[in-house]
Image 1 (cartoon, rainbow over the protein chains, first blue to last red):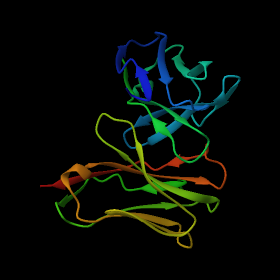
Image 2 (image 1 turned 180 degrees about the vertical axis):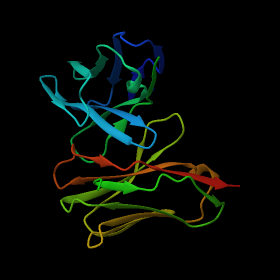
Image 3 (image 1 turned 180 degrees about the horizontal axis):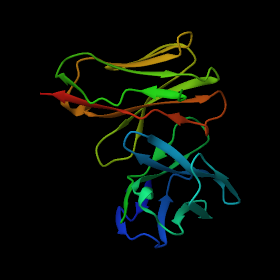
Image 4 (image 1 turned 135 degrees about the vertical axis):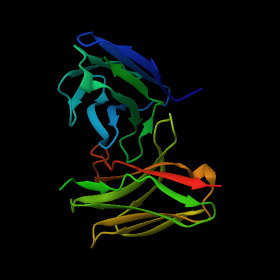
Length: 111
Length: 112
């Protein structure tokens, strides 16, 4: 079984809709991250969480919100999706060191 | 100037060739340097990391850091078709593992 799972793997939605992407991990790591990956722009950090009570904004948090429901679960929400949020979204975990463990990604298309 | 610059490629080389992948950076606070490998439709996976300057070897892979030039490299010897992937350099300041900055990634194709 995968250590970091993301659901859904693919999603197509319309402008203005609310979308939630979910991430679960069985690695027992405290730290969790959400990134988006765009061609030509690489990986950019959206939000990160050190534990259930700690949420921090990353480089590009505008238009996104997160919820850390438990140590193992970290959700990313787009309150009102717009086309330029079309991207590949990755969840990652770490122990706080330099290695991050990534999920398989969610491909989101906003029409 | 962006903090980390990486040529996106694609880079195509014949099987068995030596591959050189590179990144430059501008932030002299970076102390940890990493290479992640990302296969198509997968998340990135850590391939190698080094601390400060110097070389590190792991099988067919060698990571090299030149802090004086703010330049890092990944060499792949005896390249195989299974090495075809996107390679992302990444770096962070000392002790701040959460402040990782990723390069855009270089797409590598190894031709059989």
